[in-house]
Image 1 (cartoon, one colour):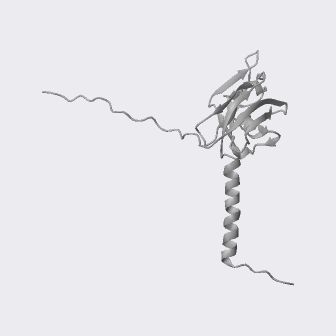
Image 2: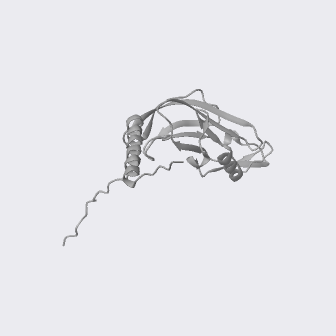
Image 3: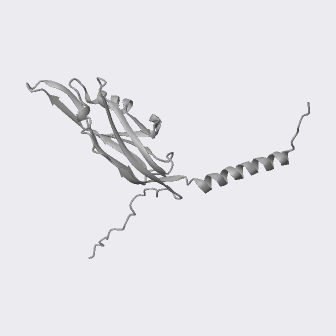
Amino acid sequence: MKKQTFSLPQIGFSLTWIGFVLLARCSAFDAPYRRVSDLALTATPDFVIDVSFVSGNYPSDELCIEISQEKLWEAGNEANELSQHLSQKSHITVDGQVVPQDDIVAWVWATIHFEYDETGTYSGSYGGEISFCFEIGFVAPGTHTAVFETQTMSGKPYSYTWGFDVVASSAPNPTPSLPTPFLLPTLTPTK
């Protein structure tokens, strides 16, 4: 059996060539940043408040869906438990692929609403709206379908499907910056 050996210059040249081909392929066919160019929304169910995209927080745009805890609340639910449940049990898929939970940021409005039945007896509470957002950097340019799925604490399923278009961009979103400070006029006391 013949053993083939390589010298370091040969290996270095081969790895350099492979690296160059991979780099050229990535840069020629696929810009690293993504922008949402259009949202195709259907009639939203009552638990969906808004679907939007946000530019500027990350190098690529974020896609967000905002839901109402009020519409998913059931008698006996308490705000903290319901918020945690919805944050853990809600899922987003893009073109059938689940967006990992670690890639979704859930923003919960820090409000609490108390519910009473018609006799005035306390029946539970729910929190403010929840926005679920994820960066679209992993989504290829083109037309896509997103699905948001969640369930009440008793297991009743809810879902909403919408479309969106993504375009490639060669530059990242500008990083948000603080406002430029300006000088206020000062008064110098006179005698």
